Image (tube, helix red, strand yellow):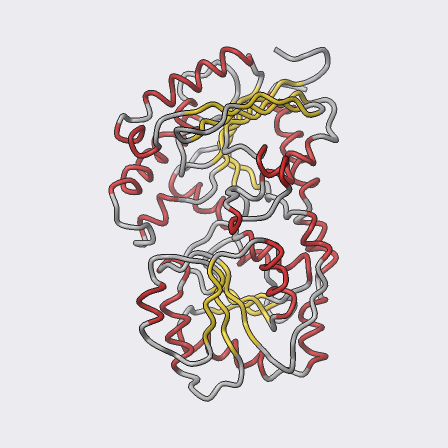
Length: 384
């Protein structure tokens, strides 16, 4: 139970510890769940919480048990995720329950239906929170999941796990609307995940002499990359470049189209990504579904305008004509028109598009705001 006046919380998630040890460098450096390290740092300021982070790693993962201020970080090796999926996560559930019994928390918080952590929710005798990273049920409905057995099983698990949580935490109003559509009657809260503080230090300085737009994310159908390339084909004489940061199953097909003015950057570490973001005219995100794309939040805290669809959390982050443009309806023609509008805008107009709402965006996406919101939720669940 709680230590003194502290509320004891167990967070089951991919561990932020490696990024805390080495410094956060992003997905291009092999660090997943990039929003968790800044959240852990922000939790350190809340001395009324006693937090244990626990993760199960792939075979060969180095075990860890490390204490940092008011937080403990546990990492224990596990079997391969694909094998455990076939077993219905029976082994993961067994090992996670042993951690629950060891820690004896007052609140259990599980992150992400892409992993096995929510499998422990059923039968807990303490309140629980389930942070849903991506709404797999919706992605599956629109055909946005890779058609392999793992994802077909995983989105079905999501529907079984959600009812077991006392509270479902979503990172955007758009995500909350979906959650209530699929699981009506659930207690769904919106708690935005913060942006790493290093993005606040980046100055946006668009390169007007070598103009380019930037896409960052998985190169896949759900992200609307096929529509983006159809839009490029509508503008064969354009004077700007499209840069793509990321990898994914559509790359080979899109490269084969051999459209001019396209640069493939691959997966970038954060220092490289920040450099590309700082010089872009705008971030382009023609996604078909995205609960709350981190790169959009990162763009906005540095003042980079965003051109994006209304099919995701970015709908709520972007005010049309103020800090970006909505692409609605999501068609190649609308994408091409939005990019042309920005590419032909005066430098003053473009700078205004970046500066407007910047102060409020920087406040809204700060990790300390996320940590405070989760703290308040934990205290509410234990009756404090």
